Length: 231
Image (cartoon, rainbow, N blue to C red; front, side):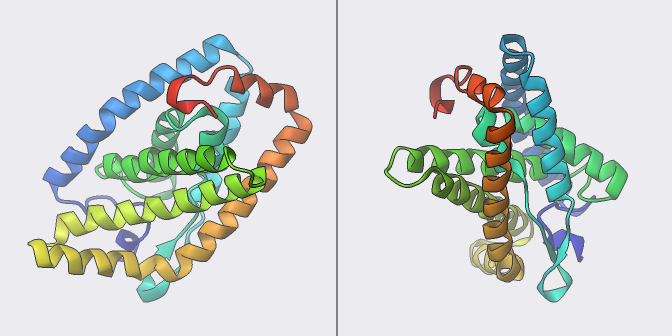
């Protein structure tokens, strides 16, 4: 049961019906993400290197499992960096690739639960992170506050959705759902809050480095954002 309480739901832990349902929910977001990634690369081939960097950043951070209470684990997600650079839609494909290889190579998460894990980490997390970042960027607050806040809250949102997924699968009724949600979310809340803050700080530092050494490439991405992904 240890890994089931981490952000990556482990192989075979979800009932088949829920595993299929979350996989089905993932598919339309994945389609939009593929379209988005192809457009990014077609319009600016240099974006491929930054996409690869965002993927590597996500892989490394989300593979770091830190002990939490009751034998569970918590870890950063690493999704906010790419969401801020490319918009949240592009991160669904990156998240799927990261989770697929983590399941195969690290036994972190699982193939049967990949739909649920993608929805929590690569759909909800990036959209929450980018949404808060874009909102705060329109205020008088410093840019680093928007980045830190978006990354931290996006990371926490991932864990809230994972707790929701587990509670839905194992609640057994309305009252059971509430109790299960409190149980699953409370298990890793103690460690995940400081982890999310640290992830926010790290995202700020990495973005500052990218801006310092790859300013032209980062600036070029702004011209490729359209619609709701404009910042």
